Length: 340
Image 1 (cartoon, rainbow, N blue to C red):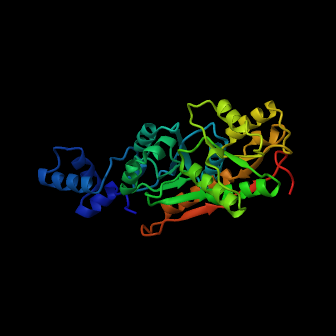
Image 2 (image 1 turned 180 degrees about the vertical axis):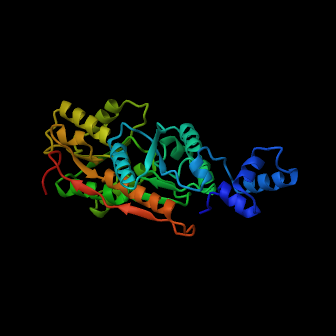
Image 3 (image 1 turned 90 degrees about the vertical axis):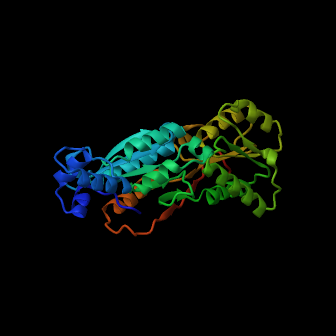
């Protein structure tokens, strides 16, 4: 990964003082035209950006990390942020946190702001719109400028950097298999995150579990609900088929809404309809009946991402290989599914 250059680095390259470099970049009359041209050209070629605080002038780290999450209302991201904050504090780092609100444009602008030299690195989970557009140039540009980046959960395979993920396919396989083993014959999948990489992987895991149990895959039972569609109507249409006896919801709020509708339709839970979902937020524990869930261990993901980033920041070896850490999930069985 390219290393961000500093005033000190430029000064050493040309055998001049930091003050001379600073004046040259400020187009000061005190510096000769030929020297200014050489220094400015070198700075441009190496993606130098002006420092805004004195610490950077001394080639010291700011001990500050930028965090970009797509949705603060999602309990998973809230848990991840807690993990990031805990580990950052432990290492003496400060955080600047931002929310992309699932917007590509806002993510681009936020990253542009954060990648200034006042930050040592960035932790990010991609916005939904970014994954839909599959436009990642802003991330690659930041990496090219020497900004260490760690992606978590929603990542892009086209960007080479450190990443922290869970095996979403395996986790969905486990949840579907749990429903089947507890007696479900026809399991429908409810997705409100079909645009996301994690949503697509979870659908694949669901299909794989059906195939393993010799259950036919029925596309009509894979219910993809867009953000502008009416969730209640879509689910009621599916549940009109009384032979469906299990639901795998790919996101927490979908599971809570599905539980409400299933209860309204007077299904007995879990005898007539079992429900399992991602992720393991507190709300799932307190609804009646409580909902079985895949825990992604968000706090641990946040801690792991922060450890990796800080190690990258403080390690002088610029050739250190990037890592992808896969965090193992856990299935927490509750009242919405039958006991094994």
